[in-house]
Figure 1 (cartoon, rainbow, N blue to C red):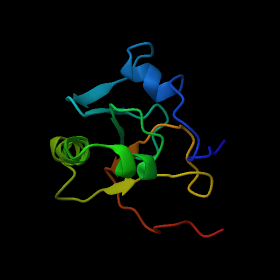
Figure 2: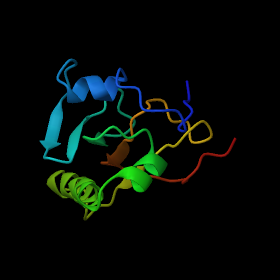
Figure 3: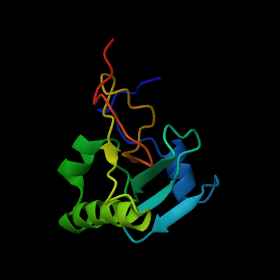
Length: 126
């Protein structure tokens, strides 16, 4: 169910629990700013989630409150994961869902990295 991205951060969300080690994940990358792991319900041959380590609900929350170091570190982590997964040459897609209209389901900022196949329509028609 989509969430309201304007609500305060909920530290009981699934990604906060993964960050604390309370839930397992198939980790592919971690540094001081980000954690990247395989999505448990992949929508492409490569489907990795990259989350900031800070308590940010959405891109809006992150871009408003995160430090310059956090923003740079998180952005660099996304690029590193794409390179490490050999996605740059064939191409890949990044997706960030924000709030109800964006169909955000977890109230912790996360970037989807999709790769391993050709993608078509940017937004499916209804």
